[in-house]
Image (cartoon, rainbow, N blue to C red; front, top):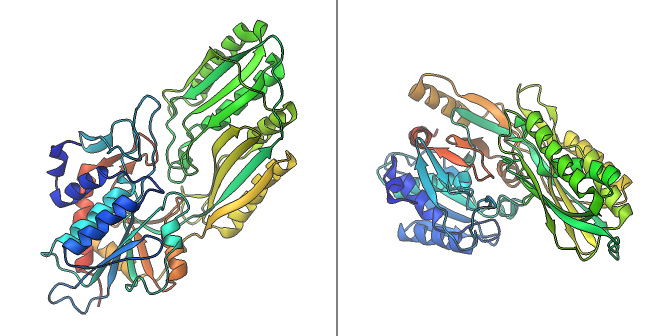
Length: 486
């Protein structure tokens, strides 16, 4: 990241954001960033505490004259989603993020930026460090490992957080106040077999590459109709197996449960006489996919090359069950909310399909703001794979966040926004999973709102955050804190 980014307005926020980009912090690697936050709090001589889950809380006393205000909690998560383009050489466990300015946007060089949720962390840090601000007593809660399993929020215990007004700084559309979110659960599916099938005499091996898809956040982007690389690959495989004598050796599609898969790769074998017709079929499917997703996906690439013979093939019966179940698996939007038009209620993301020796693993993330609809969707998905003979297990379940129609902090934030910008903010719910639902389970009397600046395409290498929006949301946050009720 160039030094000029640190001088953007507000410089304190962008300065801390820059520091965060220099600390590798993919989900599961939290030691360096939590140490950074703990050291930050202690350097400010603020009460700083870390719990057993790794979450950090920093407490700041009230400004003079604001001692009677309710304690507000600024909440953000420290981890980021590690996604990159295949053409990019980047190690998320040790390399800093290469960010740059593009007009009104901050972007990264072929990787995720980490503005989800680094910008929320940076704003909290800037609030803590600025002693000129007017506000009541504050707590800044920095949670760990949100992106996979929400482990930090799940590890919270009563008594760690004292405030009962929570401002979650992890949403991505300026001018919207989120008062609820979807819950979710993982479906972990496996096909197991003892021994791979031998190669067929005379067959040759081909490696397939499907790439160039946009991907994105499997919650906030699921309604955009973007292609799922796993679904496209298996749609092709079904015809190739049926009509061209193709056998499947390996499959590797998707990378993270909460990211729409952008790429898929497979190794297949087939009779040598069918190679030329296969090239034509691949070209036809590339044209078909580009036509079907015109205006949504601009760079779909479906390529193939000859490759060395694989060690073994997936047994034919397992192969057919796998292809049919993935083809039949529901993916994308399932139901919409009536009370909030245009908002997704339930969805599923066929996130990963990967083969190993004797094992094929599939991971699906299902989301819904209705617990009953979530259960129904999971049951439907389970049935598809159970009929195919797969083992299906549930995991990673978390509750949604139920709206509070009588929220006092919502009234404050609506009035504050209208005074600043001359219009009312949109009050809605989010299809993505926020930690608010889990925190609500630990602190049921917590009054919560989620908000944030404009952030595009989180969980993908196209992630970008608006510079001007960050400036406006920063002013909004400061004014909101000044108006926290007694």
